[in-house]
Length: 250
Image (cartoon, rainbow, N blue to C red; front, side, top):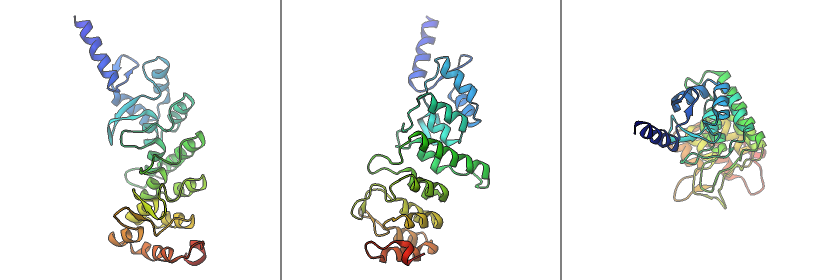
């Protein structure tokens, strides 16, 4: 009776997304900590033993309902673990229930909590490159944020530039000057990220695009008092069709 009850509990844990880890311990925290430390050997052993799938979901900060392992690896810029999961066939475009992908998370978390750790920042940029080169989508489903939008919001200008160079759509899913979700330029305007905004404008971002029943990038910059951006955005709004930002503005 007790053994049967124990088996039921284990099955319920697995269905909930908690991996039974090597050593017989069902502990998603232990797995998450191993990924955060880039302990790829721990992850490999769990997968090889059959106690963990490469597309397993585990609770993680910001995603209590569970995030794919590849997203957790991207969050912590766990480079060796990320490479292993990709080589083992993990779904590059697996999403959390909120719509984020591993590439979006890697594009967002480009610095540590203090914002001063250059090595940590470089690792996230490396994670972005690894994911893109492996074939991760640069876009997202319609009316959802994209990796470029997340990078622009955080002011990760080097990642913004890289994603643009690799073909990311500068205005996301906006059409005919209308969008149903903030464009990358709007995201940069909210935070006052001048360098990111300039890369977007140079790449042809439409400063006149308006959120459905909402704002333009210029109006957002004014709302949040990012005056360093307002002049550039107003100049971009005045550009005649076909004229590039670099020809008349900055």
